[in-house]
Length: 97
Image 1 (cartoon, one colour):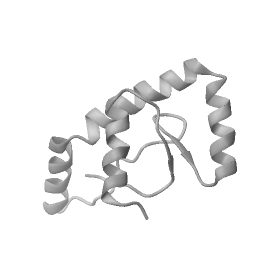
Image 2 (spheres, helix red, strand yellow):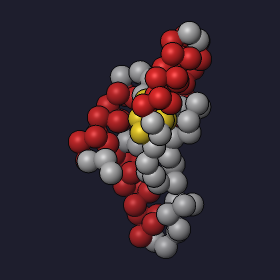
Image 3 (tube, one colour):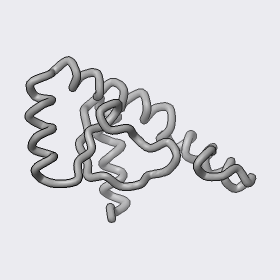
């Protein structure tokens, strides 16, 4: 289980226009998508494999980084998080909020 500091660092790296590699965990309905806007891994071997692949495909690495940055701006700012929580408190299922 990730700590709050881990999650804060998760978003800070994406706000810096970088590519993030992170162990998989459930975030919420607006979670990041592996290979689209984040690089997720389940083991050290998978991490090493993916890092080598993306180092050899810098255009793909840049694409994922830009997508991650846009996803973060859309769903993971303070304002977006508060709007999400308000929707859930209004009774909208968390998966749809």
